[in-house]
Image (cartoon, rainbow, N blue to C red; front, side):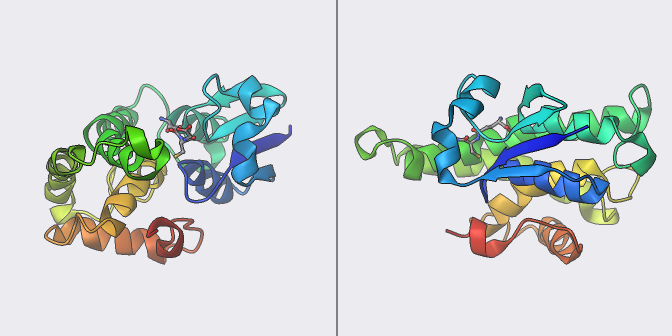
Length: 203
Ligand SMILES: N[C@@H](CCC(=O)N[C@@H](CS)C(=O)NCC(=O)O)C(=O)O
């Protein structure tokens, strides 16, 4: 079994990197800004986005699909609850919530801040996106008021997944009034294999 991860820090590929590290799986890393122009990436991801993965030659894209696949195909590690359990339903809930209620708005701002060509950027979207992301973050803050981790109160793939978006928001200064989310980001950072670092996010 050979795994190849196309990645670039601090993109969403770092979720897949942390997942691989937690699972203790060896993998080949194809990393760097030049990855976006590689035909190998286009052969996996129809939009040439990161992350992208090959597992035993099979192509997979979208960070949620990649992380779930890696954890599901190594159930002995117990990184995610098995399909058909209530804990798995909660994992799926937080992944979907993260993508639609928090990350979509962070990414829309990022696109208008530095991804799109300058003439296409619309700074007017920043406040609206921040307000929307903060609504999602506030939900997490309430959920985390009496627990350390999102599902079954033990560290899991859910935290790797949602933790990326909360760390991103944290370093964008959106969590100052959310004590539980702030403490959550600090707990994630304290984990030995955590790949979410302020020096790469905070640019
Ligand atoms: N929903 C996708 C997002 C993929 C995505 O937009 N990745 C960004 C980096 S974080 C990218 O490749 N951007 C390049 C571009 O937009 O052209 C996922 O979670 O994998």
